[in-house]
Length: 192
Image 1 (cartoon, rainbow, N blue to C red):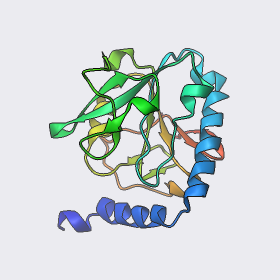
Image 2: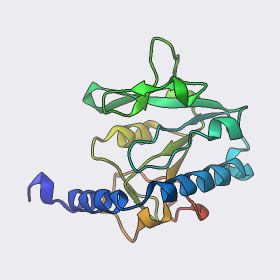
Image 3: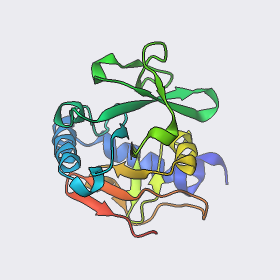
């Protein structure tokens, strides 16, 4: 089986096609609803100060309004490095981000201090798809997989409800997220 016909690659292709059919106003509405669910999640945010989020790229949920909704939080964004490594850097406004290595808005490491992974309380993860157990299907670069293996805080999958599928092909060592946050609300995943 070549790399383009693996179950994950087939699902990635299907999900990209699906997302390409969703009108931007629908994504914008889902983004607004997801941000409000996060802002009202007292149990989730109770002991959380530093939150890693991501800049929307293409047909992806935008979390930019969280800066205004939760101004007391510290926000860090990922910076992609060669060999699939991510670092996180403190940013006060999404307007400070510039197109990076993959065309995604990223912090400038000369202007934005790096925040060690150990100081991040919560990671809000993008994904092409998630299943109800919290298994994540990313773009295929492995950036978030490597980070989540080393992360000891909570991780939430940020997704539209239509991106939650029955199962994602995975292996025993794959990391899952603790919660899924869709426009319909916050749901704990079933895995321990």
